[in-house]
Length: 428
Ligand code: CMC
Image 1 (cartoon, rainbow, N blue to C red):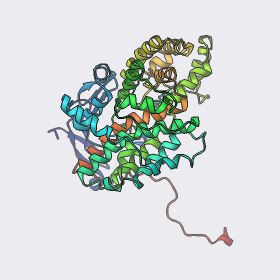
Image 2 (cartoon, helix red, strand yellow):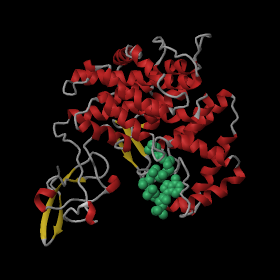
Image 3 (tube, helix red, strand yellow):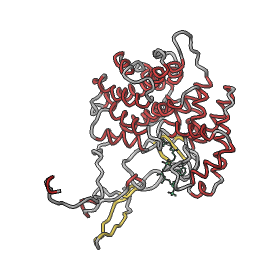
């Protein structure tokens, strides 16, 4: 709290509201007692002006294009850390020592296998099922298998279930891919890194030895870092809301996966690459820019714009650089990358995008890299879910450990009919 207060006048009555101090970013007006004192609610659908919790995990300055995890800039983490180091940082608040990192890697590695019975779930899905449909179902089903870590009031249970989720997501995502391809599941190889293991489970086949390409491994690891956490976005808020009722962590993460799937959120990476393919050639860009600006056309430039960033998304900066590196190192020449770069340039110089401060976001270039690596577009959002599980789990732990935590229960502005008497059916 600060000494500062905000004053509100309603129906001639003045209310004094405490102000809470942020270490960075806007301070917050505490309205928790407002309803009890004034009998009024606040109205903020989409939470554009509402802080839903206190958090010391991730900070975003959308105006400046800054993203920090526990204070460390995302660019530095993407360049210098591994995904496992980033995961440790998010979960434990400080960067690990070598010993701590070795211990963490060992723990995660020990949880990579799935209960064999769970593998049977996959055959219940159609082969053409979207991987996100499979992920929602299978991750939710984990609660039926790991009862020994679902007591949310026990910190040790929370830790084990967090590690299980982080460890098993690559196995589940790779199995979803294998199932769609009609190929046998590849079991984890715990001698490999987190990301190397995922690549092998995805692209390896039992008939041949799979050798992890270090270029691909590093690029994939970097993509995971860039997606690890992002403050109180829609899916994270979903995880927190689901968790606020005391639901078990597997169910909460399944809820987060469901929310992430939407094209305005994690589904945008798939939609962005589909859009780039639809545009196809540089000469067709103006047509799509015109459509994006047309109020009567629902089309939007996918991978562009962000609720919080009103500047270049710092993750997009790393992603664009990584895309160029990966294509060069893999010797892939993808005309879609040229379309993406040209589209970006045209949009960034167009008054519509300039005035509305619409810049490329994390999803604009990720699809170019992922398809160069060999992933089909339907897998893109599943990869986002895999990486974001770290953030979801860290945020969920933070929420449960907060003594001030309450069930999330928003109110509404009611605009329906006032009370009236029921009319029997023969009199209507
Ligand atoms: N193309 C064209 N116009 C746009 C776009 C776009 N991509 N994004 C926003 N606008 C316009 C929008 O029409 C509105 O115009 P007006 O003020 O004239 O009505 C204005 O910009 C503000 O947009 P908004 O929808 O009110 O902003 P929002 O904060 O509610 O939405 C967003 C943010 C990310 C949903 C939106 O920018 C969007 O739909 N972008 C495309 C989808 C996308 O790339 N999503 C990934 C986000 S980053 C990764 C993640 O979060 O998962």
